[in-house]
Amino acid sequence: MTRLLFDMEQVAGLARHSRAAPERRMTMGQRAEIYGEDRCATQQPGEERLAPPCLWLVKDEGIYLMSPGIHPEPHGDRSARAPVAYASGFDPTRDDRMAVWDRARDAVGGDDFAEAVPLEWVDAALAARSPEFALEFVPDSIGLLLPARAPKR
Image (cartoon, rainbow, N blue to C red):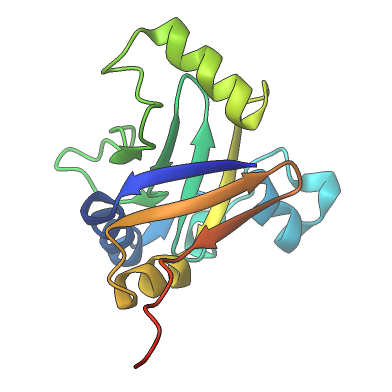
């Protein structure tokens, strides 16, 4: 089990970005749910309008959350890099890239991936006044970790 911790303020900003976007990219998993396993590897026409607001948990050189939202750019450029929030200890821009890559591989495996994270999890963490956005990663699932509530007296 790996616990991934993200800055709550950055994550809330990513959620706003995703919700406000007129279109969004899809993960292969989201595409498989809508179009089927045989068509999940290829972007489908118009899918940007069907993708629900969410965040992506991504592992490549590091581990981060990003908004899949596509916002119009001033000159029609849709290739601008989406904002991201790196998990604590997994930011290759702040530490040695190879060391981060090794830690990321040890934490969540060697394959690169993007998995959808529901915005309801962000809302729940905000409602709980969580100081950070915490995810638990195990080989077959990802879950939200909320702070324990103090017992009532």
